[in-house]
Structure formats: C-alpha cells, structure tokens
Length: 322
Image (tube, rainbow, N blue to C red):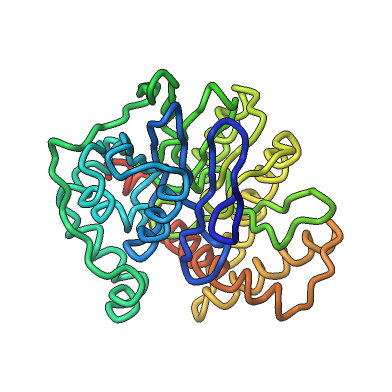
C-alpha cells in the first residue's frame, strides 16, 4: 500500500507525510513489528489525523502504538507529541534526556519557537502544545535500547544540529532514523536515483565539530539506509557522509566571512548558502527551474542563516549546559 500520504518500505517501515507546510517536507516514520507500532517523530498536531488514517488502513488501532519516539524536540519533529499521547493510551514517549523536561513542561520550548517564528505564525502552524505526564516519558540515554515487540532499537546521542538529539539504529533494517543529524534531502532533488543532502544549521545549538563527530558515529555502524525526517529514506550513505562533512565546512566558512559585517549578515549568509547549494545541485545534474529550487530551499536557507548567525554570536561554551 502506497499513496501520496504514505510510502511503505521493507521491514515494516513506512513514511507518513506530516503535511508540514507542503507535501514531502517532513516525514513521520512508522515501524510495525508483529502488530505493535512505534512512531519516530510526530510532525505537528495537525499531522496526527493522517497518522490515524494510516493506522486504520494497516488494520492497527490506537492501542497498538507502544512508543512515540522523538529524535529531538524541535516542533516540526515534536509538535504533535502531546496529541499523540492523548490519543494513544498505551504509548510511552521516548526522548533525549535534555528534552524530557521540555515535553513535561513545554513553556520554554514554546517561547523559543515563538522567538524564531513569531507568535502569529507559531499559533497558525503548531497550535496548542500541552504538557505530557512525566510518568509516561522515557529518557533515552546514549546507547540505551528499547524493545519493540522483540525488535531492538538503539539510541545514540548525536549532537550537532541540537544538543537534545538522538539517532535511532534499527538492527532489523540496518538503518538509522536520523532526524536532522544527517541533514535534509528532498525527493524532488533526486537525479537518476541519487539524492541531494545538505546540512540543517537552524537555531540555536548548531555545533560543527559535534555535527562531524555524529556523522562519523552513524557511519561507524555501516548502515544500509538513513531515514531522514526531511524527507525519508536515502541510500548512498558513504557518498552523502563525505558531502555532509564538506557542506558543513562550507556553511561555517560562509558564516565566518560574515563575522565582521555590521549590517544584514542574514542577507549575506543567505546569498552565500543559496549559491553554494544551487551550484552543488547543478553539479549533480539537477535541471529544475530556478523558481522551483527557490521554493524548496527558501525556508531552510533562512533558518540555516539564522542558526549560523547565532553560532557566530554565541561561542559553543555558552550553551553546553542547555
């Protein structure tokens, strides 16, 4: 079964479109093991009716969802968590230890998102974010495991994009669910089966050294695939890891060029990122119209530029304790 809403892969893995701003921007990954389900990332509250619909089509009921797993607590990944926990009575929420308290008391998380997006846009996109009962939250420490009906899932602490980020290794499929640690890859940019992957450096915890180390740690498991939240499965991981290292360095170089600019560093960095990414796309053989590329990259470039500016202005030592 596949439709515009869901793509089914091997080993009981499906990508459900979170319908976040546009189709195929954010995926909610569903794992089913002998009738028991886990969700990895949730999209926003408005994404959850689509999840319910997919469960029904797979002859699953809400009681079959055992885990709601968050790679990290940015709200395009975690905004639907409280709605999931309201609807899935048997589910436990599994989250990085640095994110657990923010799920139990989301006030600071909401305030931070409003600071990035503005209050009106936050309410339009994310709606209400409710507290989650702490007794239903599992803190997934580095190298901890959970059991999905006999299927082991391993959690690795993988900072770089965020300090509250886990990647999840599924031994059955020999694949990682990487959230944003292994970058962003929109299927519209695929050329002859080769994906295009680029980093996400969005505010406020981008750390290039940690990002490099996390990519190397993922690759040390020799995974067959990575399932990205933006957007789902990619292969060719050796090539993409090399490219990610190179592009992280290029993002940092562009940011450093803007360090002493006094006016509109965001415009300078955004222009540099746009040239970098479009040049790489052309080198890969992308022949999309400029407007189509602009539409796909605009939001990511804006957020990447804001994150790089924050990184310039806030040395990493200042937020290691967050």
